[in-house]
Amino acid sequence: MKSRFSLYGTPIITINNENYRGRRDLYLRHEFNGFELNPMFENGALENLYYLWRRPVHLETVEIERSKDGEPIGQKSLLHSFDGKNHKIETGE
Image (tube, rainbow, N blue to C red):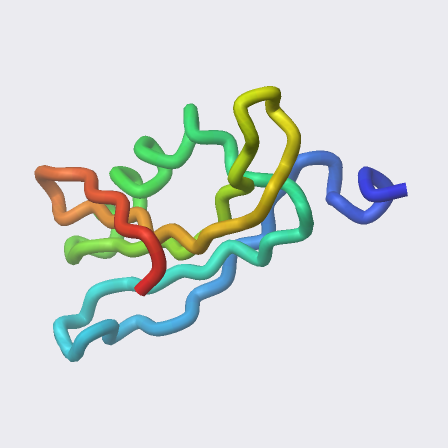
């Protein structure tokens, strides 16, 4: 049932703020629907958005925390950022 509403893996990402922290940084928010973003694409997506925006880019998302045996035990908010040189991941905001 969940996959019926997931757009078949296409994430929904919206612009939350185009002047984040008053520095014209782009702040995006992933609408978490039970599926995490694919980490293989996150860095490249942020780099490409930086290329277009020419300012740091930030992406808020959710990561599912798992027990040692792989069972979901909770969620945590993450902020992925790219400033043109370095990638940074912070927990929460």
